[in-house]
Amino acid sequence: ITEKKKKDKNSSKNDRVTLKKEIGLLSACAIIIGNIIGSGIFISPKGVLEHAGSVGLSLIVWSGGDYSYVTEIFGGLVGFLLLWSAVLIMYPTTLAVIALTFSNYVLQPAFQNCLPPFIATRLLATICILFLTWVNCSSVRWATRIQDVFTVGKLLALVLIIVVGLVQICRGHYDALRPSVAFEFSQDPSVGQIALAFLQASFAYSGWNFLNYVTEEIVEPRKNLPRAIYISIPLVTLVYTMTNIAYFSSMTPEELLASNAVAVTFGEKLLGMFSWVMPISVALSTFGGINGYLFTSSRLCFSGAREGHLPYLLAMIHLKNCTPIPALLVCCMATIVILCIGETHNLINYVSFINYLSYGVTIAGLLYLRKKRPNLVRPIKVSMLIPITYLIFWAVLLGFSLYSEPVVCGLGMVIMLTGVPVYFVGVQWKNKPKCVDMLVERVTYMGQKVCYVVFPQEDPSETEPLTASKAID
Figure 1: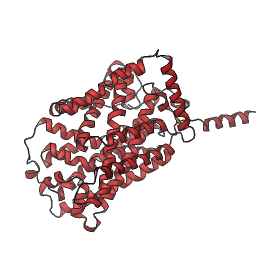
Figure 2: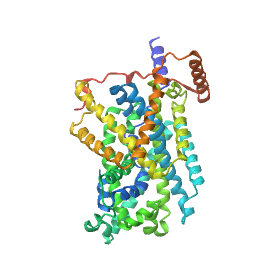
Figure 3: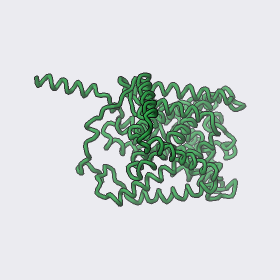
Figure 4: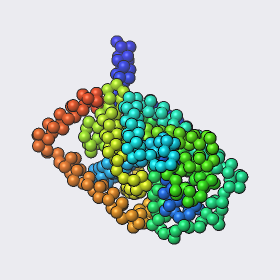
């Protein structure tokens, strides 16, 4: 009887419908690096140089689980506004920009003397997003393996650019990098323009915090999450700075500003008959970036629904594949809608402002917790100097960005605030008419049948309190 009970217990544990822990340290690093290195390093250099005004200043600019925290610290409304802006603006827009970069680089060889057609780029971007949504719906393991492989591929592509650039420098081709030339400004520098240059660069670094969204699927998250961040962020910063140095070893600032595909122009100038390597490499890089953003942003949507801030259908996972299919489909559809709206560099300024606004609120909240609840056990603890420095930089950056681009930043604020009535009607209003509750119930039931999804069961190991002995000071 005892043996039978053990078997039944093990069977029920194995059959539990929960998000699977399939993300090790390597895959965790791949998620961070893969999300950060998407399309930004291939399109942002143009925007950074344009606003910085000089090669030297642009190089200085380059070498530099929010929702849950904000909800816990500031309450439901602020947490919902962050979730609302993320689901409605930040992640669909970022996905759209990466997908458009993917399609532009794939189509660039066929349209060497002109820009690829509008419809062609949007259609190819849509096909890519639909395919990767299907992959993420089918298997967590498939999605993480794609992330691993394409992260290695994009790093190799950037290493190729860096190596070729260093060879150029060794041959004496570094006129644009000479200090006397590098700090010659093409326009009078202003604090507002420098702030916009930082916003352009920050787009290329977005994704650094996305591993927090998938902690339930990380093996030993308390160890592997900080390790992955410590490994990935310095590596990406080094690669980005060296890549921009390589660009300027073979391209004048005027050539870089005139290019719609910086890496392709770089390849055409230096790789000769092998120039085809660059558009393919960038396409592979952005393909992996789309996969990473879909994987992590869908988990944010899933988490919001589980807290009751989004329809409960979005908090359900597939009965067999254990993937959050409804949340993935919402992210996919929102991205396709955004695809046909806006010009790439305007979208980057737009989403970067909202990103930094949410980061600042989160860091401020963590400082508040450190002061008001000092006895909380913290698995990861850093010097107060780091968040305080970040907040000062954040305030200056957003202030001058708002001054330089009041329409873009103001519109972002307006869209965020549209979430206020949605929150009070959808979340705070508990005693809704029965007809509304019945409609929601029917839609949820239909969604469950179509997507074959159920609420995930709790994993007891995830609800164990963190003991003081496990804390890392």
